[in-house]
Length: 78
Image 1 (cartoon, rainbow, N blue to C red):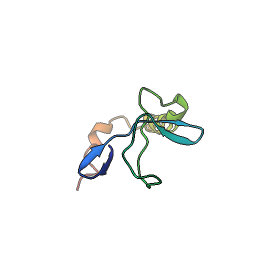
Image 2 (spheres, rainbow, N blue to C red):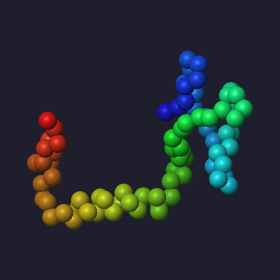
Image 3 (cartoon, helix red, strand yellow):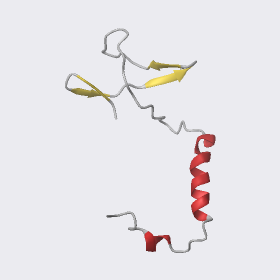
């Protein structure tokens, strides 16, 4: 979880507002440097609506009619 430059891993904290990620502190990168990152909300910032798809999948599994899912736990193993 973070970005490597040089030999040190850095985590950059940012606020997303008006379509832009704004770092909350200094970032030691060249101007206009392209970076890659995976945003991860912190402090419970995930809205309940974002979990709708997860709950839908869990609901399908719950309503599958299969009564002993533990019995099939290792089926995917080679």
